[in-house]
Amino acid sequence: MKILLAVDGSVYTQRMLDHIVGPGRWPGTLNQFAVIHCAAAAPHRSAAFEDLAVVQGYYDEDAQAVLRPVREFLARHDIVAACVHDVGSPARKIADLAQREGFDLIVMGSHGLGALANVVLGSVATQVLALCQTPVLLIR
Image (cartoon, rainbow, N blue to C red; front, top):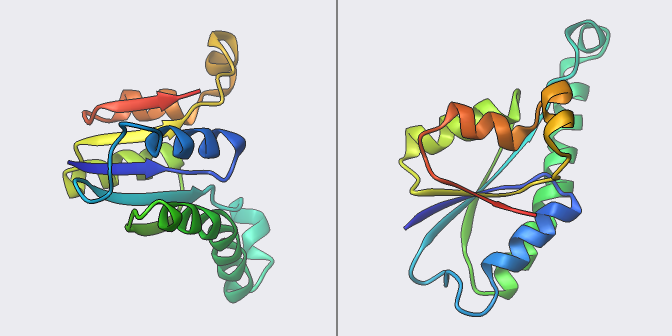
């Protein structure tokens, strides 16, 4: 099975990772894993005042800060995963990658803000569910 792990570096990411490596879960030898982290793009006006290399450096540092501990955690559990980081709408990037690469399952942590917060703020998990035909497992 091809499994896409969507991570943001939060405590909810760690809960999701703990869940997938728990007893009787999905061993890395039987499944193919990939990890995606998406940073929201800097507002156009603010990015226009900064050098492109500086902005790209910010995105790269952010991605490494999130992906490094995930890689280390997965390696401790004998799971090899390709890691991807992108800039833009996290929900759209996750859904697009899942569709394009034919993933069987997306696993992500949910902040669980509740229905009212989702209506007002929107949630990446809610948006992924709306944009994607791939099954999504949300871990709280």
